[in-house]
Amino acid sequence: AAEKEIIAIPKIKIIGLNYSQAIKDLKTWHEVNTEGIQLNEHHNQTIVEYAINDMQEGRIVLIFVNTVEHTLFLDDLFKQYNTEFKVKMVHSSIGTVLQKEIKGWNKRLENLEPLKQIDHEKFLEEREIINRQLIPLHLQAKRLNVNSKKQELYKQWLADKKIQGVIATSTWREGINIPSIETIILGGGGKESQKILQEIGRGLRRAEGKKFVKIVDFFNPSHRFLIEHFGMRFMQYLDKRWEFLYD
Image (cartoon, rainbow, N blue to C red; front, side):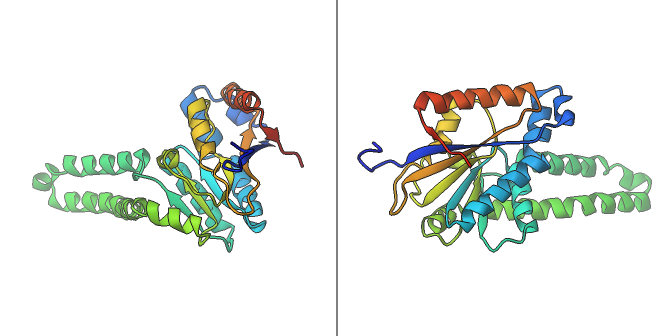
């Protein structure tokens, strides 16, 4: 298909990350995924810096992650860099972590009700403490709910190059065709071949002046889970006989 100039040729860029003893000592995949990928400062700074570098070259960037929490972390980092480029988040929910937090505080509020009859003043104090926790959580949930309804708008903005990048969860892995995308950053790791191929597939449509789509992946040598998962992704690239990019 590439010969027919219908599909852009994927070219793979591998970025090595620093070794971390703290990540090596983690036991479960949940811990490794959280501390080694989603909330890992080095991993996410590398993503943002590489994305900004490509945007400076005029490339439109799509960053794939697995959770809403990861999109928020990256969104905050982009804001810290105070870049001129516009980057939006694409997701379909407020995220499981925020849902659990709100549910937990609401449960504490319910459990507080019997105290009203026993010590009304103490009840009011405790309720005020809980509400101070709930208010910002509800505001965050409202912001995310509003943002989740803007997927089509951001898709059009990306196609028109009104924005330079999007941080997306799985909601954009299928059914999205945006020819303007020139760089796809696989920011969430993972080993599932279908997931990886779906993410890469979002940038395969040709556009004027677009010869290839750059696929950016990361190798973190800090934990056997991360090494094994990268190995499975790497085998996909070899099986497809995709070209690798070198500095």
